[in-house]
Amino acid sequence: MNSAQVALEHFNGKPVENVQMFNYHTFNVGIWQEFQRNNNTFLELINSGNFTLISNDSIKNGLLNLDLIYKTIISNREHLRNDLEQYFYNPWFETVDLDPLAQSFVFYADNGEFDQTISLSRQELDMLLSNKVFKNGFVLSVFTNSLIIDHYKRMKDLNKKVVELINKEITKG
Image (cartoon, rainbow, N blue to C red; front, top):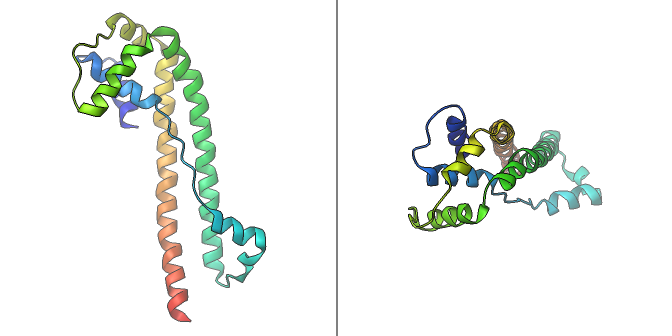
């Protein structure tokens, strides 16, 4: 989300002093890494009917609510991916030669500095900065990612409470 915010500053008038750094942030927004949770034990409890063996309703409700929050996160991530495909990737791919942009991004990610021999087009950058659809991709990225982060925070807090309940239940018996 930080890279999208940095890029938005430039869409909103902050001059781009370093084309490679702007490229790094825009490219960083476009990288998508899918996360697949492993909830096999939870699903087995539900599908086998053994979930009813948990006698503490607060623990059961906590586990079900964790699953519900995660399903909301999945929905938000799918929405974000669709937004990126429409508002980010399409204008990006139609406007720029992606090869030098990718080379610059990878070099910086690997080395922590820019390869000055990689030439990036200032003209292409200016075309992107004037593209409202492309800008809106960043706006939606910031907005949707903030929702996802809030859900993860809620999930983290609830997970801590469920673990505390389980620990109490274990020491009680």
